[in-house]
Image 1 (tube, rainbow, N blue to C red):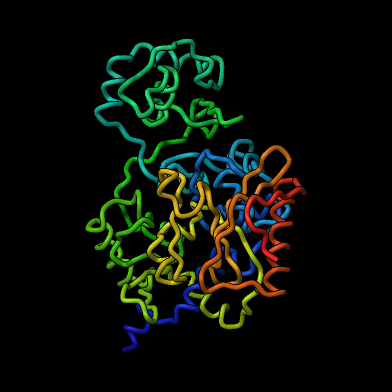
Image 2: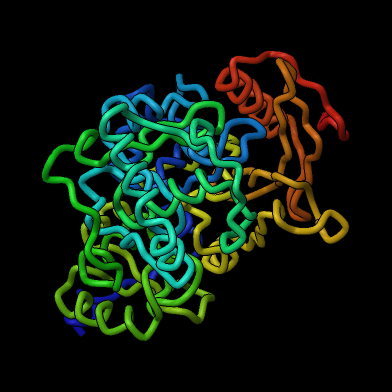
Length: 391
């Protein structure tokens, strides 16, 4: 019985929700501030997924603004591209990770397409690397080769394909992004002579622990979206069992949920803290690819909130909008909102409430406080409602 108590915990849905939100700096929201707050988020979450779409800040901006006050879009560039505390690499998908975590991320890879491209373009690629070595960082716009490469997604121009292949095979790193354009440079110039790409991507104990800490709660089976990029469930499950035996991970049972979950043992202190914590009735607009949402089935189990990012869903099949953000109120998801910055005006294209949520004076006041904070994050003060305005 004692061994069971050491290896396992059982909590209510509400306690599990509050644990996740506290661990993600969302209960209370915006408890961090400025550049130091950005550093704290990356150190705790280990990874933030990158997506270039930018309706009101890109996904990284949106993850940070929900946790950190007194920041604006692209403030993380200082941490990433100037201080070189982080790097763009493959983790769950393309992510930004602290440089000390880089060795635990997915190995850059080759496949038939990249191997064939390299074989056919050996001399040109070596010439390109030499040019970067001598002249510094380079973007594809500065490569004068209009030839299209039909063996890659989107049929890119030769220069874009070449730089991408050199990045994927570890010859280059992304040195910066400006106005949506990527620049590439040699890794040792930016990160030092001892810099090495990861030598593998199959799960091991450190990688599994890190992923659990990135998300907070993950299915014990090693399957699901939250484990994406880590390998197959049959590879992850035995590692999980070993970490449970060592007491590094804990099995979590949740009232009313049939699945078994995992948490990191070093974070069990959150469960003690949240017993004393009051739920703060504040709103937050979350990023569509927020770490909290990496495992959508877990969010459905714990929050009764079924979220789908419909950006790649054909318009006629969408239930909501093109780029909707989940709306958190206290410890519940209560709505989805679609904001878009157009010039200096923040347009609200849609606001969809969950069936169980109704406005009252307190929630209305809290919502508009959140919207005002969102405007300050965007350095904007004018809001244009293209849908019904809550009142």
